[in-house]
Image (cartoon, rainbow, N blue to C red):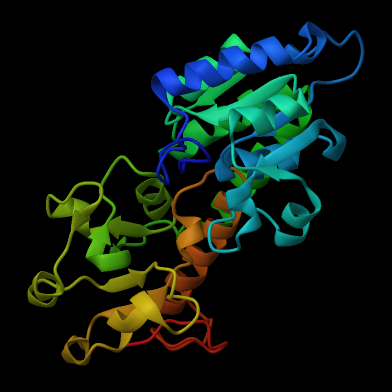
Length: 317
């Protein structure tokens, strides 16, 4: 799960440690008791604030809009959002500060395990119910997280429905029986590659690819120099960076002159937003990976030339 507001993705707010404790004390004194802690609800389902783009996307699938008091500000940015942009624009957002969240008086706050301890302590001191969720590094872990969030939101059946949609997408994206995995490097910004124990590694395995970097001893967030990749090339390079879908920035590796010598290596783009979050993002990620694999190793009778996208989607030699 990506780090969300107040959770270490960007520099922490000025209110940390002792300073934050002073702010909490002041807020506690200025806010009536009825406002400092949400009142128990005899009827209806809980209201929620999400501090992380990954939980934003899941919450939007399993909760009623009226239950969602705010999502993280990351989901308002198309470059970091894991949810539909129209839906994200229709929901309020916070930067995860204690003042913002407290003013909304949610029944439940969803954060990640990366949340700043001082911020987490402040929420709890002010009577806010904080649930922290870890990073889902496998599909199975994401299923569990969906069910947990749906249960917390009071809609367990919606969680099961989302899990069923994900399972259907993964089944549709699975390679044919007996197909050999395609050795693949997922090339991120600056040459960073994901190793084993990551969500994208699990997705690669389930959709017919082999994690080329992990097989060569590289771990999570290790760097794979272009020179090393040229000396020991994979069958496929998946470029995942902010420029990969726009024709700018990190996709320069796609047109690097040295890669022209790799006649057996194909290249494709993968939206970087598909790398980190589980939940509904798994559906789009599975479809994209299956699309790439089918173009590289087409099913019998498809009439498609390996390595060439007929729709301009992005696999090239």
